[in-house]
Image (cartoon, rainbow, N blue to C red; front, top):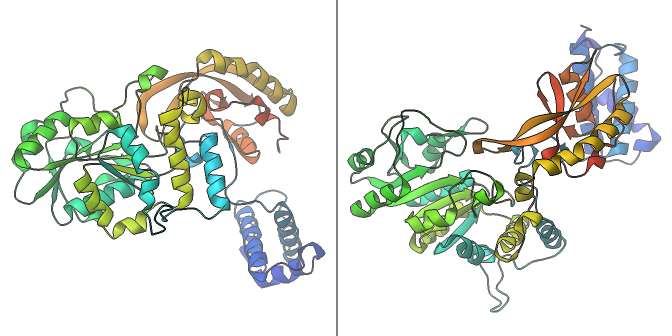
Length: 458
């Protein structure tokens, strides 16, 4: 490995970059950021002992200046569009649900203008931003009232803090879930100020477990939908109906973290039936929380629905202001909810449902065109095959459900699947590695032309 002592200082590189005519007039802070990024790249290359890296100090200064010039010319934002060819419909790392066109238009309109975010157009007085979506949410869920925050974890924290701060919340051990990024429900509950009271065992929970745990300090009974895992075998759990009955007998409300947030029966798309929010409300849950960017197919948001008295307490919590949604989120959510209420063909207008419901025949019809495009772009040294495969819903929704799909597999005698994946990433095409090959799953791709790009193959 070349010595890192040859690396020039940031100031040295800045002076060289500032002398380039194409970089003249740029703000010092911006130019410094570009220099720091370029130097970081050189540092990594030296550590990795990559070929072609000149360890001469003057050469490095020149290379950094040229890299800054290239980066400034490209002027790429950090958040960039990519092709999701992973087959994961709701890919958390790639932004989850793709918005419907009407939601995109609503966001654009809200971004370009002042809006009545908290302004009552009839009275001319201050309004409530929840009012922009509350009627639609209640119409779709049957709830008495609703409020919205920035994601479902925030919804859980806010609801628990509002209704159980300093008191006990009874939860089954079998529902102590961990979600993406090692984010655990017990930790979320602890931050809310509520005290977790675990009952039963991981695999078996009975009604008596909840009933025996209720005491003078019990504020809520809580149920968590296991959307991202399943416990199978010698198991038992308590239904929401039974839990509501226990709570009713003891004067305790039930809160359910439903997570994935299905507003309609997914069985019509050939998927297993997920709990529907309206059914949970009708069963008697006092509070139900769910995500906006999972099965609902909207923007990132956490929706809280339930009894008006409980929602009013949640809305009065000062923490609500810290977790509230901005105008762009509310614009997208409102447009998505209106689709549910008004569209005669929801699957054709909502990308999440469209991707989930695609037939294997439709997906297969894309494969020959994708194969031909890749063969033309990559050349004969790459082997390109059409293979049968499985897609996933993603984001913890329907974890056991595999969706039949068709993928295009790319292999090379001298290149590993990982190196091929890196090549495609440089073209902003994200696939997956399976069966010792790099695969492009076509379930989440609608236009084969996205593969007609110039690849970097070195």
